[in-house]
Length: 326
Image 1 (cartoon, rainbow, N blue to C red):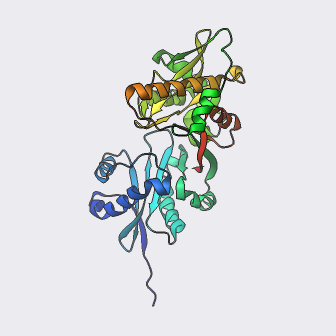
Image 2 (image 1 turned 180 degrees about the horizontal axis):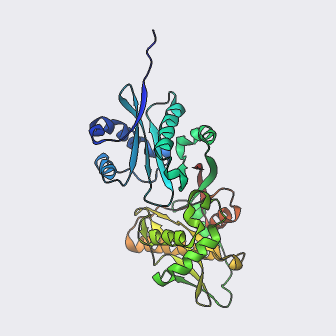
Image 3 (image 1 turned 90 degrees about the vertical axis):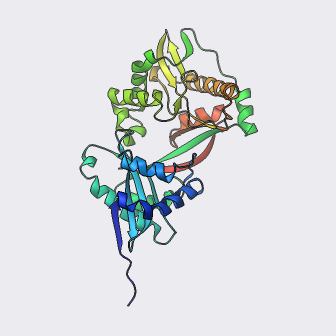
């Protein structure tokens, strides 16, 4: 009689700490090659502490009482339930194992789903799970990661050679000030409330939500905020555009949000803000000893104006991944 594998999925418990370490370290070892991680995942001890402190939630897949997969998610960063990673050892029945973890995740969070959206970036090899996840009711938005690579001579030349128009009368560019926060939240609301971003982050649909986004950017939740690099477009001394900047680490910078009020679009202001931001980042990288290698940003692959804006400054499409939401 053939052996039958017994599968079960359970939330992480402290008693699993020793037996779970092997599979977490397998994920940690493959995070760059499998999932396009930019930074090395935290150590196992820090990961377990985050679970114990309730900062992260984790489900573990057992095969005959041996842990072979896990799913990590959080509800603390945004209004969404952010599903961070599904990792399983090996390649056999991989999507079936992912599905077991995801089904348990949906079951345990049934009540939260009445009010919250689930987001799940299917980066790297997880993209193979897209057809299965769509059958489970998820929808997909293809997301592009645009990167300005400081070792790419073409990117450097593009930035040097691009000639942009002077700002018209009444317009000026300045750095971030805390006093701009409320008006910037309104700019983000107008720019994103009907975009694909609002499908997987409901904060983009309200002023309180957009204020939360601004607060989290400026309070270093998504990286080290750079107020002296962040660029604000003013018209008659009032904010009408924003291009945020932060540091993911000392080698990678990020543009988390760029937005212009509708009535001030189609004048090339986005390119002007972005060019000024990149130039200041390059200068600051040298003066602060950051050893910056890359500046990146994410945008909807179908948002052609956004993709073109980054491309015009010298950004190139690094990769595209399916962003699932439920």
